[in-house]
Length: 467
Image (cartoon, rainbow, N blue to C red; front, side, top):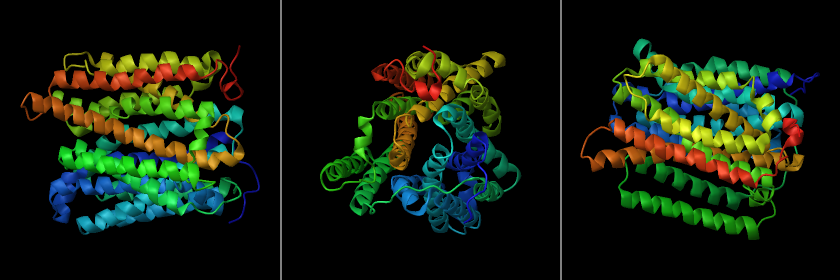
């Protein structure tokens, strides 16, 4: 592939990468409202349709860890292009599926593309911008990605109602093609010296992540009994322990390198950011349920209400840099983290008699502060990594990011199920939602004290922090 003659603007690079992130995040949530129609069309049991969701997540679990080594070996631009092509091909096959089995195979192909597309896309951006440009460009990249989970359910509902569920997948094709052409035109090829593939590490890490995510997904949805879910999760923990032994003893360059956690800014971003993502990762799941079950509105209507959270994320992109320049990463993570936890808990107090402007304002502020935190975590994670560590850092970070979001939905779903079971009721009521939102808000708030491990001036060369 020819290398572009001129360097694209940092904002354009961020938006190109964001197109891939948007497709991947949207596709992870858009199917939920379409599953009944898809089951009828494919002649499958609706209870078995969740395997299409699970297959996608398991593909992500297996292939995200290997993305950094693949990018180093074949070049980040080439792999990013290949990931987009795979995602487009998987989308086209999903749209043409004739049975549940064919849909699952197509979703696996889609998942492989998505697993490579997101971390390698982030790597493309990291290698295309300077550290001083990183905050602004990360904000531009994350806004479409944050909008995806919020827009997924209403878009899925509207398309299924007014067109056909197959169009859920067709819409990825033009977006993907535009992104592919933009990558070929504007993104330069960059690669690092590539070590041998860590095949044993790939197998162990993939097994650990697959079993952990499978146990969380199926256990929280009630598809496995508590005993079987515990057994699957135990297998994942065992495989993870074996991987850590392998990474520390038997290989120089593991596929997921624990040595990266010695970099303080990266470690705090992973640990504190994981807790924050567990909390706010539940928001796209809990809000539509609250609106549809508690308020009795349609999926399409609930989507328009919850869209306010995405609006807050859009407003954030213009103010992230001034916030971080004024407060620095440490104070932002501390105070905004605590505020975010309180705001998330407050969402559980929403009732049908609340004035609409108050609901919209609360969700707008929630979207703003969560997007600010995500931008901060996604930026400082790479502030002190060397160029040789960037590819490994991108795949490591994306792995924990995906796991945290899955864990957030699983914890929220399990908590709602437990509360309804205790009351011997088929559906959760407002009290249940209040308690679960408070639980998830506590995860977000707990991320704040961990950020105290950062020095006062951590990431100052990235944020431009004053004083």
